[in-house]
Image (cartoon, rainbow, N blue to C red):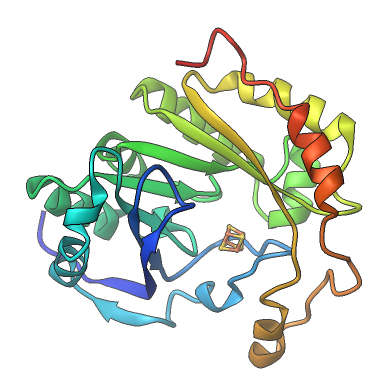
Length: 243
Ligand code: SF4
């Protein structure tokens, strides 16, 4: 494979929430989805961000090596990291060569010929399931849920463990019924280590103003943490699927 260059949004050092252990988080630029409550609309445009080479990411990731331990490593987030599949695969391979494990934080809204090699190459997947209902999924993301289902098939085929995540937004998916549906939906995934519900917050909305993009959810309040805890207690990782 000839070396390709990527588009970077930003780095985060010592990330502790985007996967197990201490991680360097690489936010790749570009996303085909347009989620109504996206906190990072500045990652959408693939022509934005800055050009980067695999070596620069490897050098940056190396700095954290003494902190990664048994579990940590690099998380590729975005944007949608699979949107730059060729660069992603190339970079994960380069990291693997020096013993750094990579995981992918994806929304399952994009697939191409590099998606399967990317799934194969990664250690695990953080799977952001925007909604278990196909129509609502489309309303939120502007993309077909079918792509997410195909990605789940690939994840199962390569036996990768998954952390499922869903952002809970008042008035959109903050109901018990939604959690029951999510419990049913995640039965499609063979290896689930964890399911996390994340409360919607309105941080990031000023980015919309800066970019001159209308923020569709501007009247929605942040998610109530008590309701979130209650909904979280309803989440069931299917026994037969957990490790
Ligand atoms: S998939 Fe993620 S980055 Fe893309 S629009 Fe949705 S929330 Fe934003």
